[in-house]
Image (cartoon, rainbow, N blue to C red):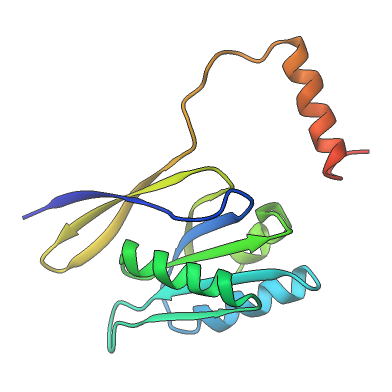
Length: 161
C-alpha cells in the first residue's frame, strides 16, 4: 500500500531552510562543520533522519530554537536519510555549494525562505520524499518595475554592487 502525504514545514518567516538527502550517520557532524566553516558566527539548527539501526532524529546547531525547529520538522517529515537545516541571518546561497560537496549528500530538494510543503510517499517499509512545493505559483511575467525592484533588492541585501 502506498500513501501520499503533504507535510507543511513549520518555520518563522525570516528563517531560510535547506532540505536534502544523505546516506550516512556522520552527516550531522559534516553539515555542522561545513556551516560553521563557511559563515563565521552563523545561526542554524539541523536535523538528520537516521533510517537504520536506532532510527533516531540526530541534530546539532548553534541556535537552540533553530535546532529544536529542525528536530520537530525532521520527525514530522520522517523520510529516510533526509536532513533539514534552518538558517537565521544568512542565506542558503552562502553554504549550498559546500553542502552539495559533502561526500554523503545525495540530493538537495530545496533551499528557500518561502512556505514549503514536502510531498512524502509512505509504504510499509518507510517514507521517502517525492518532491517539494516551494512558495506560490506565478502571478504573471516580470515587467519593468519588477526588474527595478529585483535589482534594488539584490543591492539592498548585499549581493550586487
